[in-house]
Each structure stands twice: as structure tokens, then as C-alpha cells.
Length: 349
Ligand SMILES: [Zn+2]
Ligand SMILES: [Zn+2]
Image 1: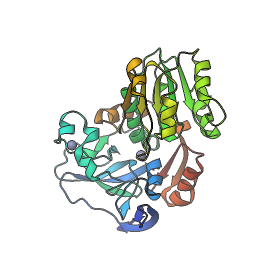
Image 2: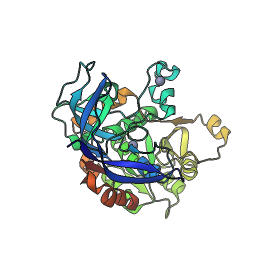
Image 3: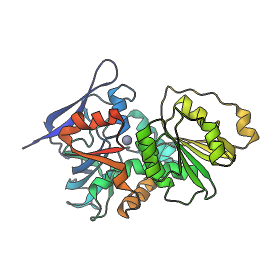
Image 4: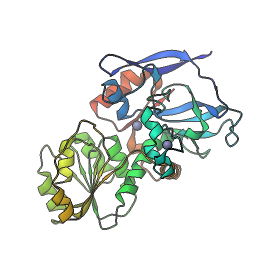
């Protein structure tokens, strides 16, 4: 058998396209620094849906899946610190190490990535039985780690990065806008640290309830409630000190900048390249506020995310709502994602 089942992206004229489950050749190591892994679990990401709808670029005829873990099956000659059978997690964003951003310690902004290099988006990824990756894309995991839970490490690393950017203090009123998968994973990280209170803003009932289950003290539904007034009531007119926008559209940015306390920070995490929002610069100056961006993560964020999963610090059972065989990716996985009644869906090849 040298064929395997894989979920392959086929681009159409609309820039989006479709995913097809097909039999493809099992990849082989071609360079001495490469590793062949057998994928154990691969999580569906909102970005996968965006790719199909044309909201995110991707390479035609590529195996999707960028949040995945596996076991080392074969190693190239130059790989000396991994052995067959090791558990690994993939950092799908390949960095060059020598561009000006990498050398300034901003490897998440590596100029090489702008060319389109992400595994599972621009190069073959984890919705398949096997994948070949450079050693530099892999982090070794403890032997005892639960590999299904470990498939959350990649998005969790982005959440850890966001939490570090937010630099949350114990006395902060923290607001997270959006209780989609990333909003909820960020909430899980924020909740592990002592803070004054955590408030979730979410339009969907199921997701709002999930935010409460994961530890939000309050849930505000902007469809039925006056967000500004509710924040005033809940915080005794203090306002929000840290606001994380996990959606990234004009409406959510405008909510963020209507509830901010003097000295507050807004962390922009959710991405929509079409969004445009209005802001009064004087509202920033006069109250010494900050607007910050958080984009993917650094290698060190992966290390922290690995420890959060390995030590069972994160409530994985609330975050992983469905586990399915890869063959059900389209019929069950994407269907549930579109219905929004799920957090993370994990596929097993
Ligand atoms: Zn993702
Ligand atoms: Zn670089």
C-alpha cells in the first residue's frame, strides 16, 4: 500500500474552492533534514472554512490541515535529536531565521512566511495519514501526552501568545469578544490566572453558554443587550481594562473601543482583512490607552502550550466537542463547523 486518504484543496475561479477526499501517494523524505510522521490527530480550524469560501489564500492541490500531531516514522540523515516513535507537534508556520524580523525576535512575522509557506495551507499538511516536514517544524512531545488533546497545541500557542501580549493584571476586568473556537481557547488561558472578572461578548446562545461553562463570570449577548450599559453595570462603572477582540470585524472593534476604561488595552486577535473601523485618536491620547496586535506565536509559546496540555491544565473535554475519522471530514466535520454548534473537531486518519 503506497496510497493514503487525504483531504485535498482544489481551487476554482472564485479563489475559494472545494476539498475532496482522495487517495494520494504516501509522501517520502527527499531532504536529509526531513521527518516523515504518521498523523495521529488533526484539528479543523476556522481558516479551513475560510479557504473554501475564498477568504484566505491557499495553494491548489494541497493537503489541508495545519493543527496536527503525529509519531515519527522515518528520519532524514541529518536529524539527530528525534527517533522513530517520538511524539511530535507541528508548528505549521515555517520561519527562515535570518530575515530582519526573525533576527529582531519577531519570528511570527518572518518575511519568508509572507511568500506562503504554511503547512496545511500552502504546503501539504495534516488531513492525511502521513506528512513529511522539516525537523525545524517539529516540537517533541512527552511520551505520555494524550495525542487527541495535543492537537490543540497549535491554536493554544496562539492563545498563549495573545495572553502574553495582553499582559493581564490581577485587578483587570477582562472582556473577550467572540466565543468561537479561538475566543474560547483564549478564555481557557486567561481563566488559568487570577483576574478581577472575565466577561464574554457573543451573539450565539450555544457559544455564550459554552463561554460560561469554561469560566466566564458573565455573558453579554449584543443582539439582545446594550453592551456598553451591561459592562457599566457589571464593572461598577469601571469599564474594561483588557479587551481581546477574537472576531476582528468593524463592529467588534467598535464595541471594544466603546467599553474601554482609562488606561485600557485592546488586543486585536481575530482577522478580517476587509474590516475598516473608525477611531478618535484623542480617545487614546487623553486616556493613555493601547491598541495591540497578536499574530500567531513564537516558538516559546509552543513550549508553554505543550506544558498546558501535558499537565492537564486546560479543560480539553469542554474544548474538543467531536472526534471523527478523517473520512467524515466533509459529511460531519465541516457540516458541524458551519452550524457553529461545536468548538474543536478533531479528525483521526
Ligand atoms: Zn488554525
Ligand atoms: Zn524570517
